[in-house]
Length: 140
Image (cartoon, rainbow, N blue to C red; front, top):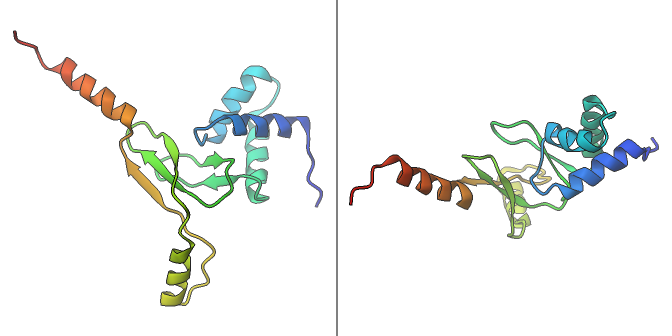
């Protein structure tokens, strides 16, 4: 099947590539729609879904969130803030050895693994400390 490179697809993919926050399809639509109000939500969703199926981008199934999209197709890990939902790429190498070890141990044919680190990001921790200061009376 021939992949069509429509103007809408170019716009959606360029938008995704400029967004560094691993956006949902709705987030991409909101950004695209501001500049191109005639594009439909279903078009954006379809373009992202097809691009993920074709391997041009990655679809991330994040617990407690709509699927996210990542323009980085290299195998890598993510860090997810449990408070604000921010997703960041972890700058550590993908451990292919894990795939090989699991394959040997369990007899599976492994095609990869997904690892997601969770915690509270620096911005949320800072906000939490500021909130704590504001919630207690200060006596002098």
